[in-house]
Image 1: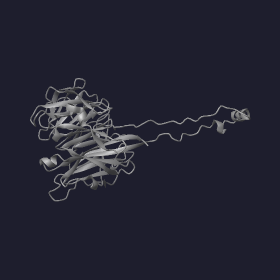
Image 2: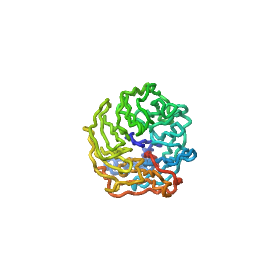
Image 3: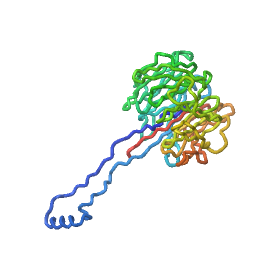
Length: 426
């Protein structure tokens, strides 16, 4: 389940603007003194007018959409052939155009972009894969090997969570088997090389049973929250010491949590329960913490924030994609509207990914087909929706992205997604 928790965009700059200096001659010959005198009396004289630079560098924002696939059949060959698709997004029209793909992931979770690098938990390989993003083309280069043992040995790992300010990434995993001890691994990114170095691994249990699912950091990184698979139905929380790379479990809430989102710049956690409902909780979480705001009828597995407005988007299994205004003082959520109109998305679709373009013009969702081969028709797709510039609410209409060139197999379904931005010198 994918959650866009970073709240920030990865940016990368190539080169610096060049300034052209205009030279003015100081040699005065013949009538030069007379000309200079006229110039002093008339500042508009061309002698004192500086030429406009003609070769100053210009930069353009390039946006890339990355979407992972999932295979609904579980034989070994197909399980190890999952893809990470790359699209370049037109920031004016919102249209994504397929660029290229990585074709050897296994049960890949949510992609996370940090300082020009993309990280993704390839759960079937028990490792985190590391890719450098080409700012000019969006192409991905595999640089996993440079991080060595720091990114391996992650059995049944959760989705990744990253803190853009510190460059810390965290992942929950089971030790050795599905029923093994649940641990947390903390990793420090080198922003220049993308290499991940292990800061530490928690020596105590994460406090939860079941397969780790999603993570969220409190604003000051002092608390880390963990949700597990729906069968276990737990939200674990504990104190995190980033410097030591340790985590100490403080409690468990029996919420059957689907998604977690720490709202940027606040001490609020937004969580969705698998039984239906979105709740807001004050952090740090305490045993018996009460819900501040609850949307009883909505289900969400993925959250994303508007880049400049206090608007939260939630994508849920079957029920659709919703927009809410968020009160950063009280933590209250107020419904705005639903993407694409009033008709909810129906079976066999589920909203498996969610992202918002950094200029706030469009939101994107990937729709997963539970049984793509059962009826011979695979309905998996990517859609994008226009957003109101003033309110952040969905405007009418939905556009389906052309994925015909992505080379998807009949059993492939689209899942998690993220968007990366780069400032590129033209």
